[in-house]
Length: 468
Image 1 (cartoon, rainbow, N blue to C red):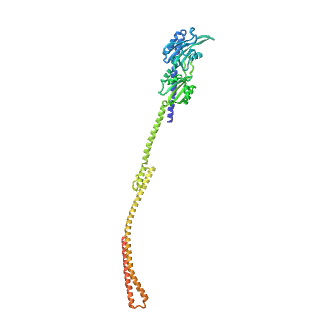
Image 2: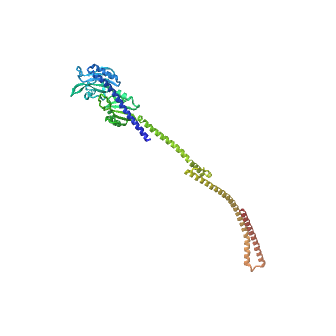
Image 3: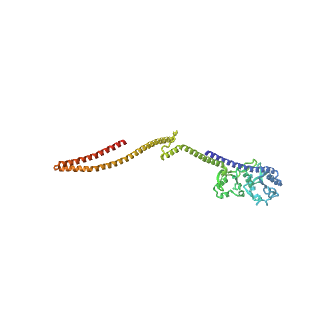
């Protein structure tokens, strides 16, 4: 996934670089079309330089033949035409007129860069943007083509002299409209900086009114400042910048020119930039990230659901064991534990718990039987104990009665024996017989009482034997 995201981002970067290269090519094609149109008329004009009245027609032809041309001027050095110090033929799209040096611009054309530069170098060139006072201050860039005529031979070689300039104007706002019309999205746009930092292409028309990139640098935005400085230094690269609180990418490179075969044109110190909204340029990248995140979230949800179902299924025997354990803790020892054919740890736990429940139920059953037996024996013992207590009370009462009954005979026997022992020599035979009769009678009484006691004991012993 990382490599896919990296590949998509790299592809977006390559697309941005290709768009930048396409913008450079579009600008170059537009400039080349103006150069080609100028060159075509230039060769025709060389044969009629001695006819100043035709110069206006050549200017008109250039303006009419190329929709990107907003104006054209043909000027010559002072006194090229002997009867005129300065000469200019100028046509623009609003109207056609001859403009003398006194009425064209704030100063004579001989002091303006679009004339002085090609006259000095003798090479065709494009000027940096400047304001045309005759067109309500609109910014222009001008293709300047020096006009050469044969001159005296020097050293046997044919020489040429630069006598004037064919200047073709391109409106900066028109250039910006043409380039921006092919922008790739609503939030992407192109910028073109002149060598002096003036905006030549920008969606904000206010910035085309001689506003420089240095104004942005002065605003203090560090990312824009860094990108602008590298563009002005002619570097190639890209930067992530923040504009009005939104993220953008700026791709930039020096503007490299194509060349006409008949003209030698120096490379311009212009820089082209493509500004892309991060959302537009990396939309597929962000969409893939969102898709990956969404898939990851959905996968996690599905994984969670499947895990939950799997865990619930795997823990079902444990829930049954918990249910059975709760029933057992409440005293229901006969709660059945379902059998299982699982061989894992849960299956072994369920098997052992089932064996434990069966063993516990058997022990509980034995305890219940023992409890019942003990309860029966307890009832018998309670019954026997009650009867025993009752019998003991009867025996105690009987013994107490017998003891009371034996006291009187015993006392009488004691008295008679004491009397016999003490008075034996002095007693008559009749008295001795009377005392012996008392002893015999009271002894029989005691024997009768002892017989009742023995009989009672035998009866109780017989009852206990029969109860057992």
